[in-house]
Image 1 (cartoon, helix red, strand yellow):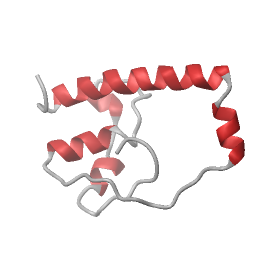
Image 2 (tube, one colour):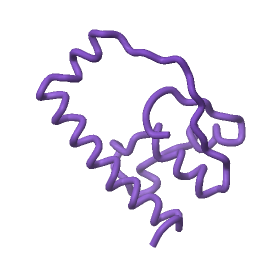
Image 3 (cartoon, one colour):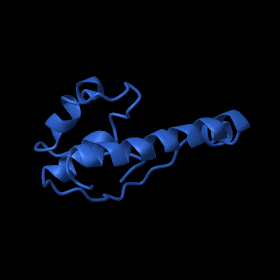
Length: 95
């Protein structure tokens, strides 16, 4: 659910198009590809994996292996994890 291509149905589309982290009191760095999914779950919409044949270029794989990119990904994962819990609590999905 968290990474890769997205397939979005018409009922879920407004959650992505209208996503505004500042209106939620969140930093602009809250990822617009992840947090609308949480809003869809809170709204009772079905969220599921859809397998797609995907591969990214070798140059991207090589760039991801540098120490700078690894550190960047760790920071992004930390922010995403903390933000996910905070947003899920805001939406009443967890206490």
